[in-house]
Amino acid sequence: MIIAIDGPAAAGKGTLSRRIAETYGFHHLDTGLTYRATAKALLDAGLPLDDEAIAERIALSLDLAGLDRDILSANGIGEAASKIAVMPAVRRALVEAQRRFSRRAPGTVLDGRDIGTVVCPDSPVKLYVTASPEVRARRRYDEIIGKGQPADFAQIFADVKKRDERDMGRADSPLKPAEDAHLLDTSEMSIEAAFLAAKSLIDAAL
Ligand code: C5P
Image (cartoon, rainbow, N blue to C red; front, side, top):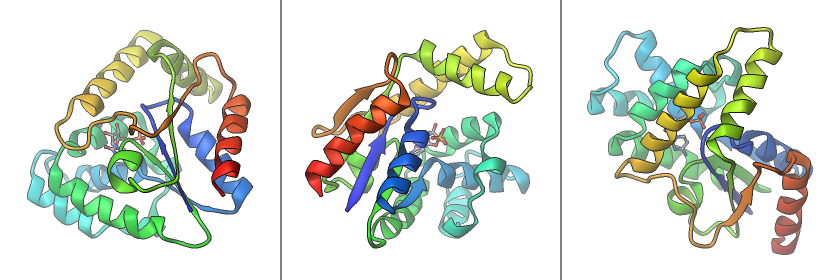
């Protein structure tokens, strides 16, 4: 059983995916972390973000067990990740690792941008989780303020829109709902309500 969850940055898919994985005892992979870890390895080594052969080599050597959400969640890393995510050789390497993960028993939840369309197109439950750019920027802003850190709403809003453009506009595996995905717009929906909607779809597919 593979549950595919896609959507733009800060739509709530991470929280939703973790909750679903916990509820069903499934393994969870936040595939954004694989792009982030590849970008961070390049940045740490002082290597360029636009050399496809170098980025591919790093992507091929990625260890999924070593992905650390706290370290990889810095905003600059998300931005760098979206730059290397346009390169087909990087995507091929990471998609291969993601597909291997998706076959773990008893089931898996994968979240990202292209799970339902490219990584696991045969998944029986596909969710496309979205929310307006304003709502997503507001959530990100509240999250940063909640940690006691400074945040600039206008800057965050601009970043959200820039990332959407890059993710939706790229030629290889652009962000879009799979034809058979269920749309969950969380702009005016609590994560709890989104979870209950997802749960009834999964229960019907089990
Ligand atoms: O979801 P997250 O913000 O961690 O993802 C970082 C970036 O990685 C995204 O903006 C996107 O460019 C890329 N990504 C992707 N395909 C995925 C997951 C993430 O292209 N399945």
